[in-house]
Image (cartoon, rainbow, N blue to C red):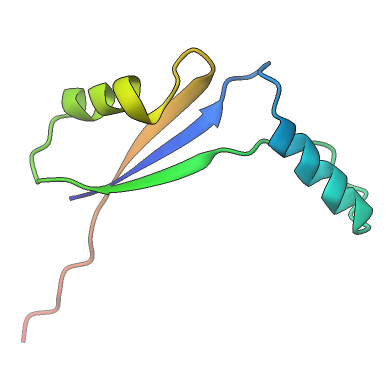
Length: 84
């Protein structure tokens, strides 16, 4: 099973990477950009039947700093091979 973990900074936490993106885009002439938040995406291949509790524990213990970051777990349905 494929799982995507979306990690982002909590609201109110300073995002220097986001500020750099805004500054760079505005420097390129995209003046309408007012704010940006930069996060990360982690894709995992796990055994079918891996519990939600186990996925949450992975996030809390390693993948996200829950003091300053939020995370969201997305289970990906893989496309089935057509039967011949």
